[in-house]
Length: 220
Image (cartoon, rainbow, N blue to C red; front, top):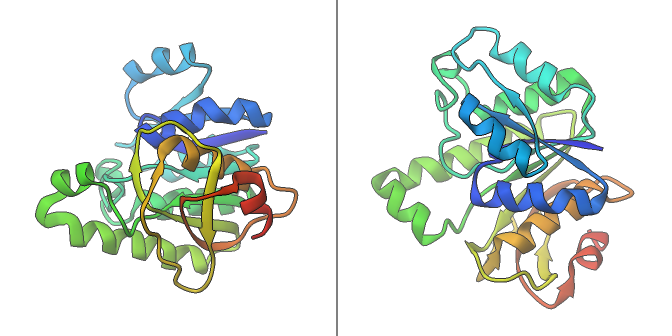
């Protein structure tokens, strides 16, 4: 199964691309710069170069996700309106990617949302942090209106500690994450969600815990 990733060059996106082959999936990264292509190919990631300055960016995204089994938004910051270039000034990449998945008939869609951004994100955003959180909230709201098997993951604070293979997952109308979770464990959780026998739908909060990842996802 091909899994198309927006945000493949982020810390989480890198972990996800590494983990997907273990689940029988081929990672496909959406990139904006040709220079990103070779390092990703060397890591076993297929790439699609988007012309984000073109008015055809919507068509480009639809073509990029066509034939995929799932789509993932793994980007943290830089996903607000205009962050994919001038042609996206009035719409967020989260909305564009979800729209592309709908148009291409790709039903499984996972998005990494945020309620506990890590210290690096907080420092990077500064006074823009409230806008960032609103952006994620708006992306979740948009997903609820889509004809997709969507899952929005709200992680605890991300760090680069070693994977444990265990998490705690909460569901509900407004689940709140707590504590921390390694990027590696979050990536594995995404893999388990994307490849579950039945679609995992809704908003989930996930943090470090003591339940094996596959078991935690199966309970959802």
